[in-house]
Image (cartoon, rainbow, N blue to C red; front, side, top):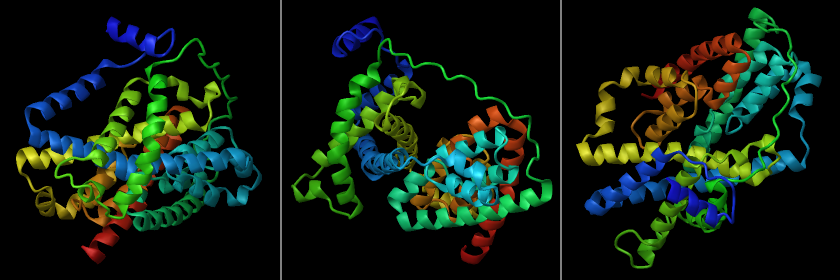
Length: 385
């Protein structure tokens, strides 16, 4: 531990601290050991890492960069927009919630706590949001992703107006609270993630180009004559490992409150999504390889209750379980009805700050979101099962 910290200080040019969690590094070393001892399993691990990075992570980074740059340079003040146009709060909140990621839904929650939006706006945002799983779907099946975006937006608007009519706009609202002072950023040093930031960006640029080729089914490694993993696969695996390392290093400098720009936010959010995508990819591939199970056939036995399971998973806070459901859908393991139900019921990471800021309102809103989710899921299931 000490030797690793000293090495990090040397690489960082005299930074004061090197912060990281040791257990993710242990997982990476375990994968490396398995790859060395069993070449067949190792090839699956490398391939899954590469696929996660080239098929998802590079597109997540590009999408986030575009969103943050537009938000920054156009000077869009969503809080003022919500407060000024109260008649349009519900559709605006639904649109913010439907945007990939969880930032839009968090904005709506904070404005509700401050007394500027209605409970229906909270309901619309949490119903419309798909969280970080939207990036995965847009990267692999953009038309399906856009369709779910439109569906979530429509269901969110209808749910929001229905709840406001049923309960009134101030339902479960506490007295508006002043925003707590933001702590100043810790500028005494940096951590290991900052050391890896430049290599991460250096891999991203060619990775995005290669990801586009992969999306168009261009096998560059085969064209270059490689029978096994070639340069494309290894570059993708390297990008995935860098993301894992930066995530494990807990890059606190990516916090917007510390005054950092778009690059830090893009890297931090992309790494978070990448970790869960890698977990889902590896879990699926290794389960099939090591057990010989055909998960598609297994789920066919439970097919009538799969939409219900997906909706219940959507009630769990965080984006990790939702990314797993989306991965299973993209691999043909669960039907579209399950994906639709999960997309509507899940609140992603937005539920975590919502529970802290307005626990009763967020709990009621997420439970309410299960109703339209079940209607859509089973309506789709009976039509296209």
